[in-house]
Image (tube, rainbow, N blue to C red; front, side, top):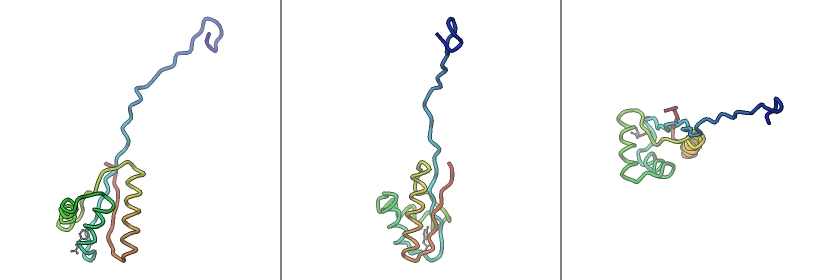
Length: 102
Ligand code: TYC
């Protein structure tokens, strides 16, 4: 028995419920003042990179101006950016970290 009375029915349509979350790249930007060691430390501490991987990413940013630290959902990416920016400010380095939609 549907809402239209006897002899009517409710047809509930279901959508396949698999949704991919929007993903965001977190990027480090080069500058002339932040020490290389500090950038390597940031990549180890906030992006769980090995020393070697962190060094490779840092040098990529140093030479190309920008480089990817990781890909995350919106909230995680936003948290990483805030953590890096707060940490850089605390140590008085001009390091910039940004996110962009993939
Ligand atoms: N260019 C900096 C230097 O020569 C090093 C550096 C690398 C800074 C990566 C920022 O995101 C950065 N000390």
